[in-house]
Length: 341
Image (tube, rainbow, N blue to C red; front, side, top):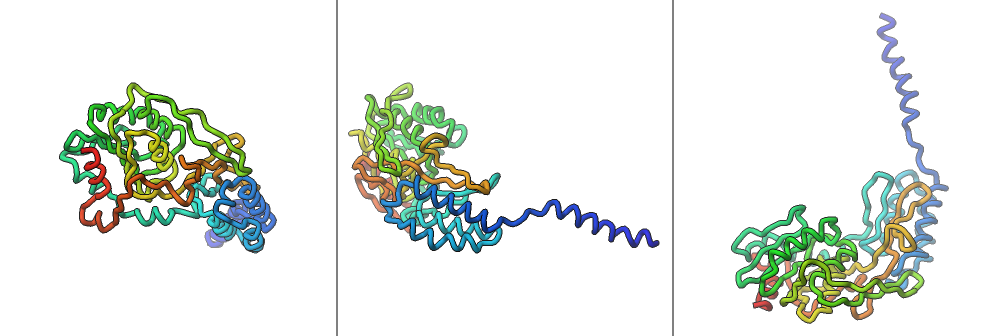
């Protein structure tokens, strides 16, 4: 009887010792300060838009460093979040080892404005057949009445982009005109954007200039024709506030082509980029193992300005609201169709 009564007590004691080995000590203020100083310095020396956005980064150090020193345990995440949010940049994020990416600033005001001003379900109502979808779901495409091709690009980052885009374009090759829906979806990287542009050009074109945080100027290699054929019939590209990052780069580059019209509304405004390694690496590890990612080079529009915060304007502005969508109307798509008829 005594043995039975003592067993739970023994188990509690053993569990106490076992659990003590599993407890993770809270980060000290010294570690928080080391992380803070490293994050602040990364932005100070590598972030490309401090001057463009007129951010007084030195003054923000005096605001947030005392908070970092007083932070206990996970409270530091809020300090880091608030500090990085001051950059108002949708490409900035941080993450812990094994954790997801946390974006302190997203989306931009224009992305919020157009969040419900576009609907793929409303788009479908303009077709007399089901839209085709490539394997992997990267593209939705079909032919509208009047032999007008339509393709929506979900992302400029898929590893299968070239194959899927080739499939869609082969189907749309003999259309009299093509609508490229560049609204919604995610961004991507410039290499895939250049490949997409290469499907529509017959001669090489110079790429745009870009700059590092010190203002040094660089230029990417020329963009060249790619693929089995080039689509050269009239093209209309639709953009809005939901077009962001690589989607903006694509629309702006396509303005170089005489057979292209870019219509809709001004894009979200996220132009900076970064590399995974090398002098333009965007990800940086803090002393604790947390990772901070910032843009390290400044891309420019055709007019020489960054599209960060200001976006890429359409050549023809066609406003559209959430109210239009509720009524089942996609005025931007309708305008694109009329332009090609």
